[in-house]
Image (cartoon, rainbow, N blue to C red; front, side, top):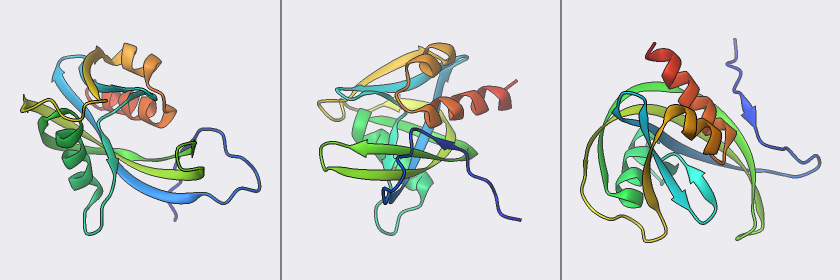
Length: 147
């Protein structure tokens, strides 16, 4: 039996989407407080695209460190979801195959990328502000797993 992957975002008919796998983290710092990255494009969970030879979990941990200077310990796999997006910067449509993991905050070891601002939000605030609905879905899954 094939696993059904939830889909989020608006899929434009007749468009060929480029598959872009990535790993993302729901990082808990304290009860009901998670890491969110603010960029010029919106609010996102720490994480990003997988590089050659890297697993989704390794990509998520690397991206959290690069984007925000975060050091984390991975906990659990939360799930996989697809997000349909258009990148105006490169003029391409992507099907982001996002693997989500829960992680515990260890430390913040540096400033990270200049255009990435680390914020700590309640789960409810994060769900309402995250730019990608797949990421809000992952936060909700994490909350259900911790109940």
